[in-house]
Picture (cartoon, rainbow, N blue to C red):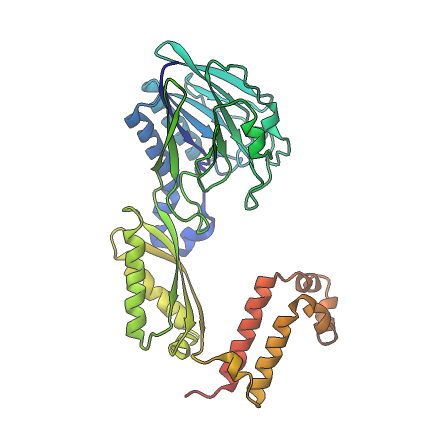
Length: 420
């Protein structure tokens, strides 16, 4: 078997709208709008620069089933560039772009194989005229794909390096839809050498014998997808030994930062710390722009200043101006202020006055929050009886209830504790 190399990418999500972030950050709208397309262009450039033998795309090429014209044309043009260089491409479609929702009116080069949803297909790949790999794959027919598709694969070419291309939830990834579910053990026992998976947006290597690989998406799509995103280049030797190299492709990075106000005495102190935080974001983004969320937390003397009604809006505007002047820019999508007064509220609750009693009441409610709806029923019976609101109150998540109780605590403190 001749040695060869390929690139494994997934979850291109061409045309992702970034769910309103662009409207909140007009200065970043252009970069956001083109981010997935730029990342795909970098993917094609990488294939050409490394002179790989073929490209694998494991589902969710497009962000939505209707596949925008720009997305279709960009994808076709990129694969045409690969075809001109003699690089083949194998493509499966996933839950975002199932075949049932789309009838293409665009032609792809003959070097591109689009897997159908009817059955697992296997295509043989030759390197320097000698068969070297067998690539098997299947696309999603519907968005909600409940079938355990991994069970349809058959390793029928043991003399070749066998690759399974599959968009799936392997190992019960709780933060992703349970589409085409399978286990790591299912894939290990399959007889394949490499499982080229898609669907999970963070890169993960679930096994090395055989290789079971999620490359992640090529461009992070939200603040939950922080860090570098890209693809794996896979080099296979004559003895089938396999080496993976990660290549970042993303156009911009997402980052979150928590800034503690503890120990900060003045607004100048806070401004200096915030500026330093944005500088660190920029320095760790590999020369890419950053879209960020910042949270101010902790206990300190700045609480009185930061609780003012316009504080969050003013600080956000200040941070955005500073970040957008950097090169590359740091765009602040959201600023949260969750600071506490410079006082021990548990000790303050021990005092024999109205504020102390209220703080003790909140503490008692927090301790029994599991039965809170029942305990509040006599007081809030009209709200709980409301056909819509009542259902919402009964299903308040514990984390949201904690936040509401903390907000109530701070309201009590602000109203009843005299300013120093």
